[in-house]
Image (cartoon, rainbow, N blue to C red; front, side, top):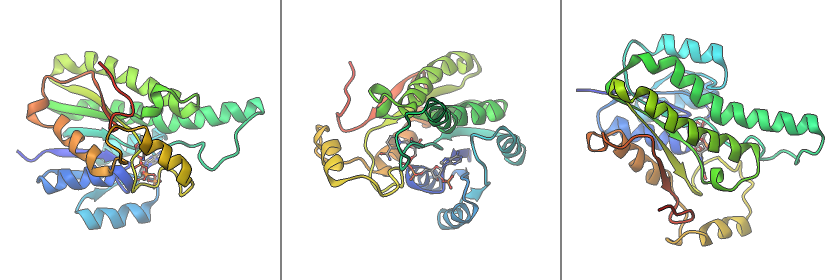
Length: 239
Ligand SMILES: NC(=O)c1ccc[n+]([C@@H]2O[C@H](COP(=O)([O-])OP(=O)(O)OC[C@H]3O[C@@H](n4cnc5c(N)ncnc54)[C@H](OP(=O)(O)O)[C@@H]3O)[C@@H](O)[C@H]2O)c1
């Protein structure tokens, strides 16, 4: 059976690699992003269907759900990023509030809105895969807090949708290169520190995450749900 897959934030970075992997496996793939021109170019390159949508905007997400058709099998909530990058650190309380709200919108609300909008389209055996961050483990920022909330919400979502034969998991990447996440602002010193924190001695790449997402959406992962799967080369370990 051909599956239908939605990858939000599929126009670049990790999401593009995830979408391309599903497409190579023969699935029908819809990708979203805010920059329509980049979205269209990526869709052409990987043979996916583009639907421009800001995942943090309820109206646009409603329109996405209407445009996507009646049935879905896999939802990958990839859209997100640290909205503080490139901005001066906030001290004024109004700026602190704006900074935190921007990260909560981009990284938590984006996944909650998209999932809520398309949940009733998921066929039995379907799955929701959210994308968190190693920052959820330690970052004292709106970004870290938003991703930590996403981790917790995924566990509750799993309990809510499990009886319908659906699963929900979260993939939590460590440092992944070949993305626009840092907007070109990652210093060599910080990059070296991020790599030194791993056990593998290397940065992650989008295919590391895409392979994990592919597995979580496979029939072999049907008893895995409500979990946070860390993909970080050992930079954060769990027992
Ligand atoms: N790279 C890392 O080291 C790293 C580490 C941990 C977690 N992550 C997480 O991995 C995910 C993907 O990040 P990435 O590294 O691949 O970054 P990226 O290269 O900047 O790609 C982000 C993608 O998401 C889209 N996007 C961003 N905000 C969106 C929104 N509100 N609505 C729809 N699309 C949106 C972007 O397109 P438009 O800008 O055109 O919308 C782009 O396609 C994010 O959730 C990020 O927090 C990344």
